[in-house]
Image 1 (cartoon, rainbow, N blue to C red):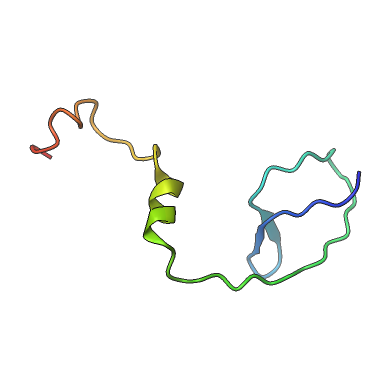
Image 2: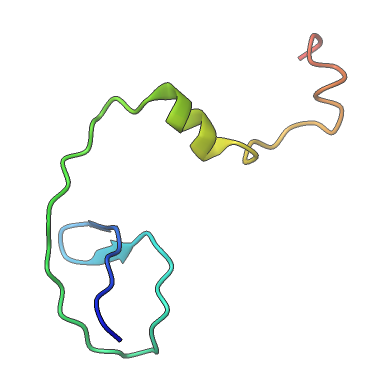
Length: 68
């Protein structure tokens, strides 16, 4: 199959993969870990794009935006 690069987080004992991985169940893998130093201050535009379309609100939110 080759090499896959996926993003994951570790809770101290287990890795939780953030990306979709197309592997058969119980596939044995060798993990090479590279720690990514993430900027704690995310770019506001990237934050908005990441959450775009995920906010739930009233059906008439756009019509009644001044009311809310």
